[in-house]
Image 1 (cartoon, rainbow, N blue to C red):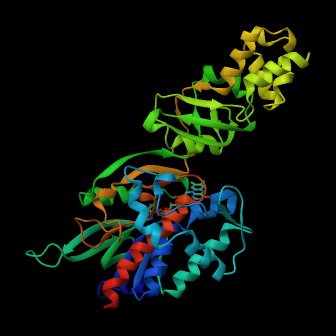
Image 2: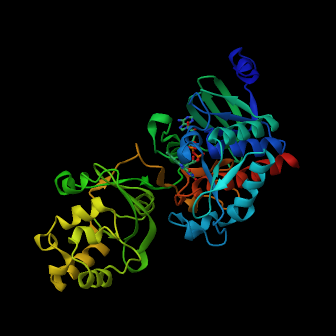
Length: 427
Ligand SMILES: Cc1cc2nc3c(=O)[nH]c(=O)nc-3n(C[C@H](O)[C@H](O)[C@H](O)COP(=O)(O)OP(=O)(O)OC[C@H]3O[C@@H](n4cnc5c(N)ncnc54)[C@H](O)[C@@H]3O)c2cc1C
């Protein structure tokens, strides 16, 4: 237990902080460190025994901590939410290069994998150690594990409710603070500590929420319909996947993975953040292959079975499963009708299927929706109608694409908030 907690337990005066940050994940750790280093007295609370569980498991244990392709001037390209432009100010003031500079300052080796995605060479633990060292440099007090029981806003006076402080009751005692930062993340992966506390705090103070749903999540299909494809579980291939139409149309060129219950892989995780229930996906299983012309050409040159000819363009297990769907596709290609080949090419390049659902929060990487950005200042992340209350990271209705964008939002929103926390302290 820290000195502050001991003082409280001994019944002395209620410990007072400039800022209390709830949630020691990516955003909370970074905000606490930055505010602490700027002179704020900061308490960081988390109910989990360990900090930053999501950093630890992210990127297959190597944490895809940012993305070089992020364009702060055009956040709508890589962020989803009712108003992706909200993150522009924070990202412009703390972009990928700023976080890369910090990682380099700590001597952490990293590499670019794919489409601008940066990963630690060794382990995500290196980043966690970096964030803890930054917190130590800011003199941050940690209470962990520590549960928040009650939060109250104490207005300065009955006449002036536009200023005051927050009183937080925890299982380690009571604290007071000028500023309260909510960095409790989203609902995904409850077994490593995700809760709805941040949303409940928003509701307590009358701050609107955008409906939450799992994002970056595998999609599932009706058991019987899926049975013929379930045998392909484990198979991966590059595809072009699309959903929506006209203004809502969205497409990704990424890898698709067949699972026992449906589809996953980067292509599906990306599209899941745009997919609306009850609507179909359109998947090109052989992007760039010009399949109609290629099959017509193969018919003139080959006596291979159609499945074998198809295997030049897609994995052979998929070619076999696809050819098995129609007797006209179960013959040598030179004996197939032009019509049958054209139908095969058309269906494989526009495979339309409607998911019945998602794998839910137990498998989702993120939560879409959250604290409505219209209620927050985009410069500081402070609630417009509730002085001293801030929301940062994933709890806000800003969701990034797969590829390091979510962590960059956590760093940038934390940084914007920390500057605001430190501003009055500096005067
Ligand atoms: C499997 C997986 C892999 C991912 N990989 C990547 C990746 O490679 N790149 C990327 O950019 N993004 C990735 N993400 C998304 C990324 O982890 C999150 O967007 C990011 O962690 C959000 O940061 P945050 O600080 O807002 O929330 P979190 O990091 O989730 O931190 C929230 C903290 O609040 C604490 N908390 C919650 N409830 C309470 C409570 N009631 N009381 C006290 N404390 C509480 C939690 O214990 C946690 O420590 C991944 C997510 C998952 C699940």
